[in-house]
Length: 453
Image (cartoon, rainbow, N blue to C red):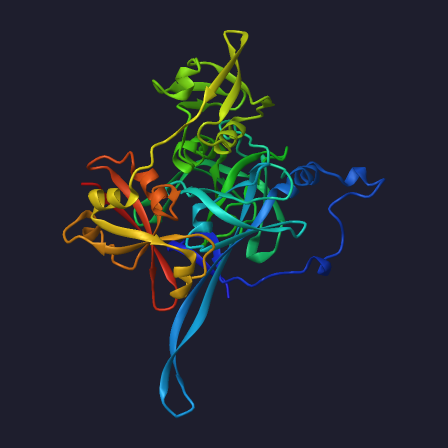
């Protein structure tokens, strides 16, 4: 059964729920590679696909919850019997770093208690959410690969031309690595998705995209990423929309922020692709004490040359407190070496912050505890055990028993992560809380804007 997520009549997010459309690789003949002597058949589209095929993934999101029903026992009486009920959605994504970082749409990973990633060659890995942004519908997930992956080349979207060739590759209706082509039909489109959510500055294309293409790449003829497929018009044909790659580039420093994700303080912000330039330094931070200056260009981290800003962000995510990081910088045309010792970001009390800011009484729920209530998860959860009357959380209709799974952009699996995200929240700040609530048959994700007191 195919079921599109629809936010309003005529507009649908591309993620499809409950798809079971899987084809074995052995059922399809042919090869991705041209035979000797067939060079004239290798068109620019073929070459573009060959560059990216190892970078594109199928993403499966599964929830398993316990459903209680009635059954007759051997004595002729009715008893309550627990049964497991699973829901599954599929989408697409693409590798942005060799260490296992993958970008996709936020709605692809929404409500996925268990995520897995499958490559074109059949390799499958468990995945976890690093961070997501519902407003821009972008997310980054992480796998632990056996060997370095092939990242896609991030292009640019500020120079796109109406009429230029576009290539969409993804997992439409469960058909792995399907390629379609078209052109850019229009630029700077705006789509109202519903509930006050508006996607802006979208790229419109007539390349055929369908449910399951969500989160997959829109490419130019060189095989460079120019957009992330996200929305289709369900009341028309060949009208699809993609988030410009420049929006992903601008958001990645927040999604891959080491100070929030793994609580390691660096103290500087970088921007740009080539070169990667320091645009902010916080006073007294490790970067400041190491002598890093505004405008410095970062060429290498610990002797490893950087090929883009994602390299720098991921290299910082791999560090821990007290690690010494060697930077090779270029300052006013000369090479400068800097050495900085990273610091731990103080661990705030997540439970106390949630209570003080929102009136939420929360506690950790381990994977084992989750299984006792019928939830199959590989990581912990944070459960709401109480809500203060007339508090911000009460006014937002957050209830005891809700699972607090997202705060702003970040996935929260324990109180330490709750504290990390809430540490910088100030009174009257609006914070987006994502909770899972057990419905009649399965978990429902509810997103609330809550204002700190």
